[in-house]
Length: 379
Ligand SMILES: Cc1cc2nc3c(=O)[nH]c(=O)nc-3n(C[C@H](O)[C@H](O)[C@H](O)COP(=O)(O)OP(=O)(O)OC[C@H]3O[C@@H](n4cnc5c(N)ncnc54)[C@H](O)[C@@H]3O)c2cc1C
Image 1 (cartoon, rainbow, N blue to C red):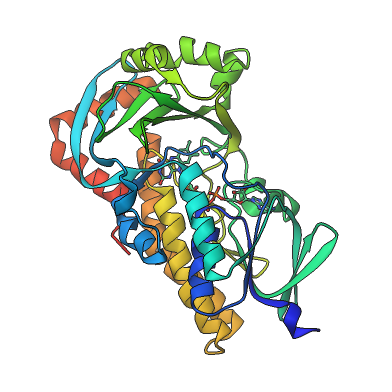
Image 2 (cartoon, rainbow, N blue to C red):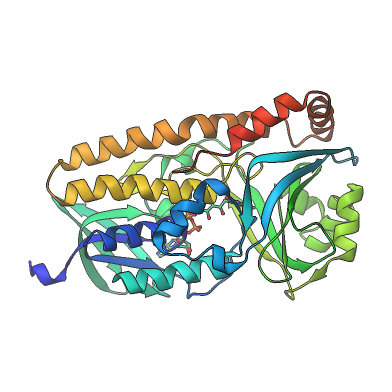
């Protein structure tokens, strides 16, 4: 094999996990190639609120966050489907930035660091062959010593490899749909709102410029009930919450039609599959109500970068690389995902959410503790 053509690491997916990992590895001197099926810049379904735990990490990669003049978000308000409101300052807080802006800025940093980026390029398969990976891309074979799955919530490779989370019997953790708009609206700059409705919740918070991100998650049954019309679902189901009724009727929507995704699953996933290290949503998606998936994706890239660097320098075996990564991943995120699933179980049915919010109003110390569980520590 011609060594010139062998990459140290190939990354499948150029979202936050892939871009952040590529930058760290390239800065450590490794030869990195990253594949992204879309073309930057592009919009993504996401609430676009990033917990402060990631601030220092993003700055360390070279993202000039302070100069970007982004909104700082310090307060949370949660409403029940019937309109009971609960407000609480956020202990750590966060900031708002669109994925359109963030992912593109990271892509430029990755290019400057020397990462080879192939955008508009879908990886069709990855095969582990003795000591290297063979990636099948546009009738071409790419060879790499290591490979990471940074392909997000659901990818062609999950289906191709029949990953176990797709094989489990369907449950309350499956089959969600998500809808996102960028809007203009009179709403506080420093507050993230989570408005609940029957079988779903909708986040609203400020991002850059004069925009807000409005993003909601619900089960596919709600859409079916609404004759597969998003507009009908918003008017018949979401707008029963009086706060959402105002938001949906007053917002000035900045796209012609919303961005949508379906078949979102919060089932447990494996952190190593086919010898690839899985990062971000490909390793496990936390419900947005209960945690900060973007920060977890970035944090997992830091863990993977450390382990991959040690392996590429010949200090540990492939088996140790895989075991160490899984152990560190579980130490950092398994508890958070577990709390997430418990909190999630209190939401959905309107009566459960009403009771939950009444209890939080009565016992703000419990609420503060729960909010702390959904935000990690700076890394
Ligand atoms: C409704 C909703 C709201 C959310 N709100 C928030 C929030 O406010 N704050 C927060 O912190 N988190 C939020 N999250 C979670 C957050 O969006 C994710 O955790 C985060 O984007 C994970 O990053 P990632 O890099 O793992 O995946 P992604 O950002 O999804 O990136 C994966 C990339 O891989 C590419 N890809 C897939 N398959 C292939 C292939 N075969 N070849 C090449 N490229 C491929 C995709 O095009 C994609 O760009 C939300 C999630 C949902 C569903």
